[in-house]
Length: 319
Image 1 (cartoon, helix red, strand yellow):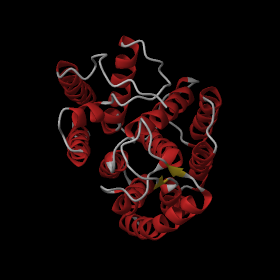
Image 2 (cartoon, one colour):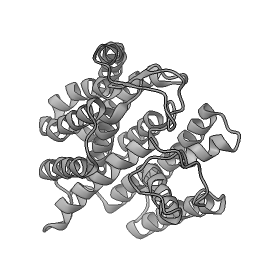
Image 3 (cartoon, helix red, strand yellow):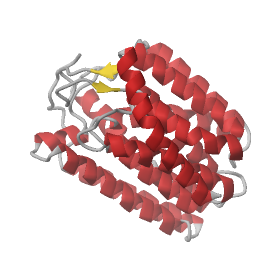
């Protein structure tokens, strides 16, 4: 079933992405050039719809209740792409998506902590993927590798869902590779963030070892770390947290002379290393797994700080 899930999602993603491109152009839901944009011409949004269609077929078969938070994420993102949603309203919507995710994916912790943790994970990863989606193939490539990593550490139907996400993203990535012909848009980043949060929750299911849950944290560490670095830099610069800028780590790499494809590839390589780490820690005892993952992630964070990526100096253009 797992291999079939990947193939079906890949095929659907490849077929649905051109249709999403046409729909975006016809409805005017495109990303136009501007101070915070890297492209020189308008690029269609709504790539997230293609990913959703590719993922939904498999999810409907193996775990249909997961369609609720995934569809809600897609709808919220499409509205944001088309009309724009105020930050507070968007946060309320994300919390609602998190609550539905918590209702359909049980985790190993009893009491209110488990559902709250799942809801928080959804909110964090929705925003993390959204912030990571700043260069061609960046967010989609990192998320595809992360989904493949989850497929390596999960089992049965959960593995099929992870492979379906990887397949749908692979189909979309064919059109999102530089120079991108379509973007994920908010629909895509909200959907992918929610899907990754659901996979993270599955890694902490009651019947799984804590080592698998620790592996899940490693698989989502990169987008979360990028978000944390962005927040730290904006706070140091006294820049509003919810106002965009071109000072993300990947933007700073480009400013330092890297090409955009090279910067995206660097993030993909780091995510591959984290995926390998995730697979390795699943074979360790809980304490050893936690120690290995914590030391590795901390070393990556120290390297980012030491390289100056949290310094407040950055281009301050805002839309």
